[in-house]
Length: 397
Image 1 (cartoon, rainbow, N blue to C red):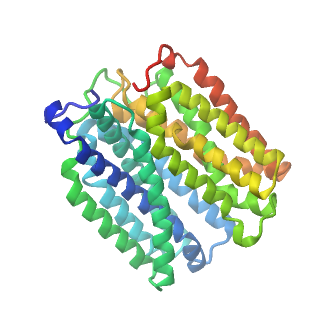
Image 2 (tube, rainbow, N blue to C red):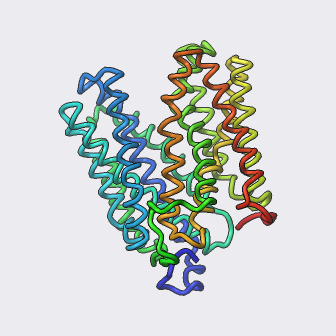
């Protein structure tokens, strides 16, 4: 077990469905808070009179805040337990979200986004540690459904943002609604989180040389999250500049990717139980490669829509799977293991979109997507060679 539990395993098993709902709602709250910020970026950009270059630089403060506190997040979760951390950090995350509305210049916005990254990362590590603990109660793969809740929250947050703007509510009012929702969820559901904290196992810090298996998982996560980042930030531009879609249909590429990623996460657990994690990750790599390369070779509207759907299915199960495997590491506490893997993986999400832009500047956006298609192929090869999966022929571990 990845947690020294204060309740008996039998008690936890009897409460497993309620625990799963609670953990899913914490994933949902983190997702809707982040999506709410994203939905207001154009409004905040106009309010502060920021150029595209200034906004791009300021937006880097969020992932920087996440990366620099990976070690702290892992240590807090290991020392105090993810349940205790989650009683505080989602509310702190939402309070920082609200403070974004008070930013009066680029410097203030950058500082607040740094804190938003810090608190967001603490949420991320603790909620994924809860996911691992809940998965162990069920003794089967359920992690992808938790990440599915996060994806649904992304849609919901965008819709709430659209609704509040159409109702004439300002940014602060919008974010206060999210704060009330997140606080209510924390008060109601915190008692259903899996109690306890990670056993110390061997003394191991975030800054120790990572185990080979964790490093390998991190690289797989890097390939997947770099592809996700490319789709999040560049799919609309690809449809506009390469596919030459009408303006009102530019969003179709992004929407098709997101819908299939969310769908893939809700059906992913059943697929993993049937095929096993190794085979699922290999198929995912192939889907990423085929989807990206198809969009490069055939840049037509319908073909690219279907291709982006394949990419969405391809990335759906990767991060939940590697987090689940990392959290069950027998030598490193769950929080520290997740922080190590998250750090490497998140570099892909951070570096992917700028790298696409640099390659596109020198060659073309189609060429960029062709290069990124190779990440799926590399992932397929790497998973096949991973010693971590040798002997894995059962559906779930």
